[in-house]
Length: 581
Image (cartoon, rainbow, N blue to C red; front, top):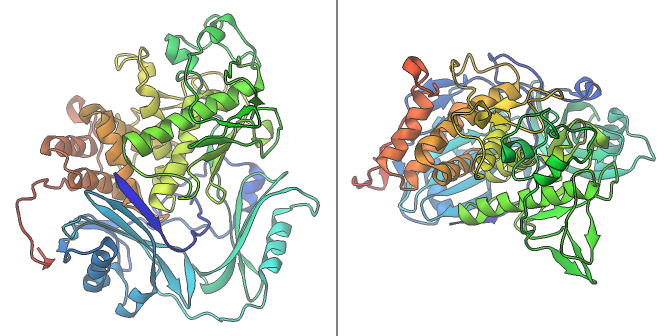
């Protein structure tokens, strides 16, 4: 099991939509007007590989996968700080800067703990600046993920523009009408290191009816200039998967075979028969009615269209067909609740929207009816569109978007460098759907399909989790974060086939929890996953099998990837003195 404690209110977190410098760059699907509004988003630098980790051009380590340091046994934070005091130079930090690292979260585990820090400057949080140190109870530091900012300059401590001024500037920039319904707003002061220098800024986040996306806008506190603007939603490209996990996989049918077409959300005998009886757990019963509000999932009709999808009723039997709007709310509740229980209870990995609220808030009919779905970091909410097959009918879409949330809650910050978070969502979703009984086998092409009901049809092509075949990392994994994300999902799914579902799912989740920062790439995350497996006591064979999936390539009919991670030794026979190995 692991336990999570937190200090310091989390910052609004951005999802970087550009790939690392030097890679083929392409934007994911976002509305055209939003692309025009995007400002100041800089691609992450492509790091250089060294024997012990990955390093940036300024000499600072982006990640260290073999830290070779053992601290004196103490509380996780104390051991992490001992490591930083001894090795801060390799991270590009000065001794005096160590006091600016504020403990944001301690994710404790019996096998290893992750201590995540937020950098501050002049008493303010530094925007998108994080540092995570993973350490065993014996004091061995096993992974370091460094997203701190170097070269910060002193900023004016007096703000000449108020937070209200900044929000007004952001609203005007985004074209939000004065009478528009505001769905979410937040504003806070941070220090921002821009290409033009260090600035004190108001970090505003706003979501409004009539505005596509959830926007983060950084406004200079002195001049009112907008330095950065980005839609922070994580989008799925018109996806949907339903039922158990979807009607095509459940019946081993193909789209457009008799009865298996969307037909404008119409019922058919075949689709109605493809429903599966399940238990909806922890429904709220109050005032004589049941509602779709529980421990891990909460239906809320918070964005258009208002479709009566978060149904409340006296009966505890929520039986609907797909032509009824209530069906998508029930379907989404079941799949979110089921997967959240799997991660938090079966795997024993704490991953919830916040310590005080474990329920994932979702709107099963959102996006003004468009063919799109998203997770919003600022609100920690999901919404699902309706174009083509209704997105909330598809378990792959539901868990893919939930996967962005899990990535956020595990790592503190989502990285879309090389499409990492898209791949994380695809891996979680496909692993979930592949475990349902009685469906496709590895001998069927459909076994490797993502979005089997929502995609691979006239609406859109869907995605796959055998994308690694005949591809190599990093230069040949596709163009755009959704294509690139397939490589991550495929490499990890192959490892899952080799060592088993729960073992790989746990290593995947715990490994992600060891990373932080928007610049984390696929290789860094892969190294964290295999290091996590070794630290959790996986056998040498299991760790080597993960290494085989990550490193072996495709030559000679193999199905491996080419991350080139360091495969850690799993023996703990060597005793280390405090400090250095």
